Length: 145
Image (cartoon, rainbow, N blue to C red; front, side, top):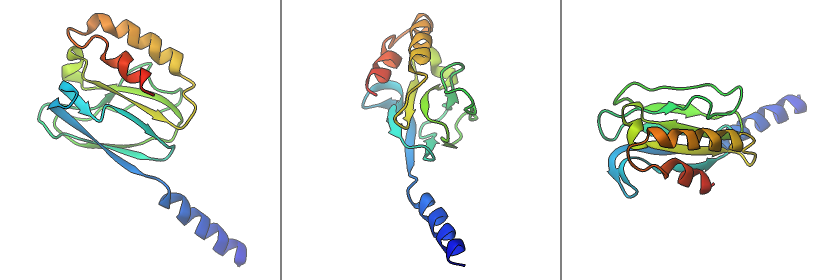
């Protein structure tokens, strides 16, 4: 009986240590135009990020090849909020699909082990060619982690 009670208490405490973060999708913010705010997050495994469509016509979508192996991809609808719980450690890069050419991107590091950092950096360098503005934004964000 004591073991069952202890197990129940431990599982309840695990949920108490997860956190939620809000990322706004904005036409303009402190960091410029067509931006996620904050655009750089460092969170723990099990935390949730709520992407909020503060301004219309934005979405949040994981970038192919720029999330850890085994992690689920996501794509929200335009002008719709989406919540993502991150259960795999590593680096995640994401974009607003209609504004990707304007480098409306962000990065999230989950945990202390960005094992896929080199892969994400390589992809970020390749993406610079498609950006019509803010060409260094994604690599700058990655360097902040």
